Amino acid sequence: MMLTNTALRTATRRIVSSTASRRCASSASAAFKTQGEEARRVALPLLAVATLGGCAFTVGRKEESTKCIAPTDSAAAAVEQKFATYWPRNIMILFGPPGAGKGTHGPKIEDLLGIPQLSTGDMLRAAVAAKTEVGLKAAAVMKAGGLVSDEIVIGIIRDRIREPDCKFGFILDGFPRTLVQAEALDKMLAEEGACVTKVVELQVPDEVLEERICGRWIHKSSGRSYHVKYAPPKSMKKDAKGNPVPESMKDDETGEALMQRPDDTSAALVKRLQSYHGETVPILNHYKPAGVVAEVNANQSMDGVWGEVLGALKRGGN
Image (cartoon, helix red, strand yellow):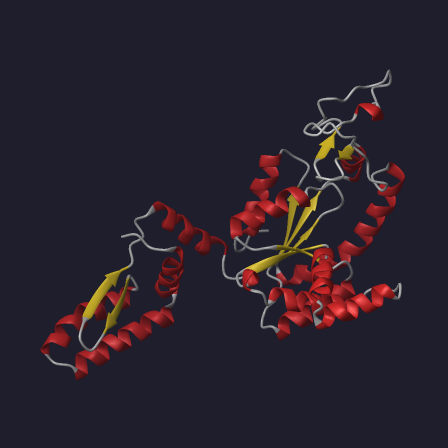
């Protein structure tokens, strides 16, 4: 039997829900008591399978049928397993210092779970462009040269997570940055009947981050990223000291010049890491009592990091 993903999700919920099973059993029992011999013939086997939770059924006025849920299609079974392993609704916060790999593993989590990764910057720009109520407030503040308040940011997040693609969850990247913001986020989610279900921190030693960050070069127009050690452009040449010659750093596809971000320097990184550690530790401590914080060793191979991320995403993973 071939089942659509939607049908499969519905069926899965029926199977695992004891309440649903009791309702099925109750319906079958009612049919047994109130209908004639034919209804009894149908209701008896239904009553049995409803107790086991292995079949879904419908009893209509003109037609009775039993539909056993048996996902024989491998793709449907894979979806069922994904839901069983990673759902219900995931509300995740992804932490990691600059260069830890959030930009690499965040999209992979999106693809795996089918939930969007939300950047506060992107949400803010979208709200301003859409001229939503909070977007107009944010635009007015920015036009006056001020900083957008936490209240406005929380309002923008609230609007965004009500959109259909956030139905099964979402990943927050870049928020919260402070304990005050974390507490405000918790309050807003509670009002929505939700809460943070997982906090994943990608951990990398500061000395390793310096090598990762300071070796990065980017192609500005496309966003393609290179690294002098891990992913050098084909055109790269080195001087006598082994450092890349800036003029030789060209994009592989267009041949255009690459650049380094102004804050991808040793001096700037020290300040960025101090800020990150000072702000992040209190947030992690805030969520640890809830048992939702998972630490991932991001100072290993890509496959190794991803394996730990998968372990962290599973219910009870930490």
